[in-house]
Length: 539
Ligand code: GDP
Picture (tube, rainbow, N blue to C red):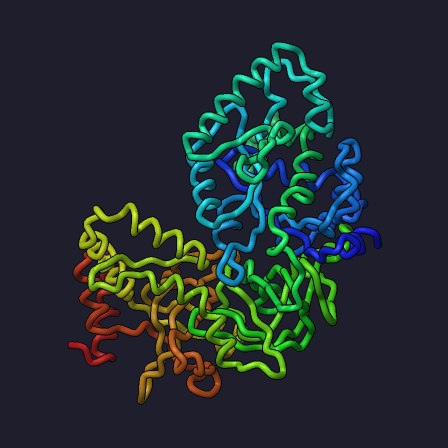
């Protein structure tokens, strides 16, 4: 294949750059991504464009074809371009690869009718901070009054077709936007007038609707950009791989979606990923990619691979991935590697973020779904939230916890023919005999000893709807999840039996919480509470 050979011919061995799309909401990020994917994707991915896990891959051949009207298109030093499918800050700031951003280059989309907007500036700041190269797509040129459509044409050609009036409006808006960038400390210029590429950032006017300027944008990404980062893009044998997302997939359990930047992955490889409770060491059970043919792309069907190399989006199935953290690096343990060292390296990304937390007594409780969002949140709290009265937040938090602690009384009876799962999680049909069963209620089985089996995590009523509570007289399916290792071991048939009554676990604290928050308890429930108090010997 020409595309794969070319980089080596030029004496360079470069990998495909990884690109993400950023900008203010409504600037056209999604539309632009759709547009560069082109209709070819809808027509069955002719032209070699492949939809990967979390990303779209454009081989150099495809880009050469689409940019053939541009003189400079013959020389491409990279095999292709990988564009991350989630536009916005998320894909840029949340994804790290060995300490820096996973993305090699970004497209900063600016709406020509609106100029720089708050999230444009925010994106700019992320890019500056990460020292990331970028190209500005000055989008929606088709909205200039009187614009003559030149579908998918290079921007020079399209501009040549426009009237004087259109050009006047174009120039006025462009000048204003260049000034706005200057105010942010950046020199920018139309790319074909730019004599100082590198110091002055390139602007490409585009329309994501009619495609003008898209060839120019693509060519800049695969031709000019790599020149500025030869070192970063030089292929290496050393594995470089970033976790994009952690997802449960039917038939595969918890999987991770990764971007393989350098090196190779094999089925059976022993891997280490950064986890919520420390490093996760496991083995690759399956290496998966989507079906290349769109018609076969039924949810949950994937192609299995023995091994995979070069820049690609991949799904990995393995055991123990449920605690993996998105946005961090994945490591493979080689035969001569020191696993302890690798485990430490795997935790580096997280530790570098955690070490920045000021560990004083007072504070706020923060929770984030990925490392990148945690980092962004910490940044925000450090810079902007200094004036927030922390004790108010703490009080709110305490209140919320107390409400959670409040346990409503209930007595449940197992319906023997609706036992779906006997352990971890326990899933049962039950009759609510008395009281009220709520999500979050701790459940135990009274007897000689109280057997604690976990908390109600979901309730499904007879209409198959998920509900947050069920009242006496109702028959529902509940799921009970153990809150600790002890509870997770509890099994129907061993630790408790079909004939046993299940009751909500009442404690002094939970009673106190009920009372303190004046949570209304009906009189029947009051009587039940009294009975349960006796049962639990809380008088
Ligand atoms: P995002 O929030 O940045 O992802 O923006 P979208 O891609 O969702 O676009 C926002 C709106 O602008 C949508 O209604 C698009 O159809 C429209 N839009 C995007 N790009 C263009 C463009 O180049 N020209 C015109 N006329 N409309 C556009």
